[in-house]
Length: 113
Image (cartoon, rainbow, N blue to C red; front, side, top):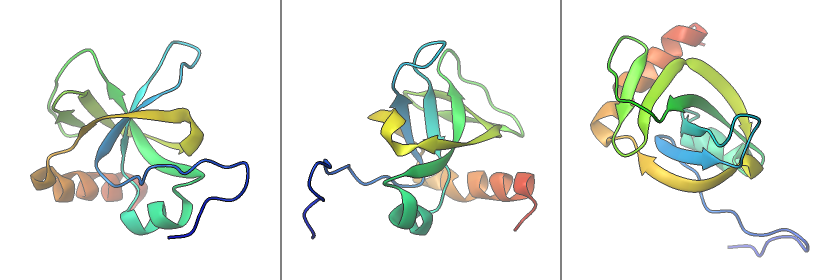
């Protein structure tokens, strides 16, 4: 493994299905579920990830809602790019059995590109 460049700290690996808490934003911190593939995260995860917002106040299910234990409800239709530097704490992970169904919904929402 290569050492980080001078002046740069080593960031922990980021993977599909992880739920992260952000730094304080305008309305406080936000939780995000990472939905970018591990290949994308390996290439760009030190700069940005593709994620969906998580409503940390409740657990809901639905066509575009995915409960994430210990994190809240991932709002799958709220796809955003997040600067990696904004993600400060790993708070939960999507159950592996839910990876494929969530990926199908995300691909459907962006047009199966």
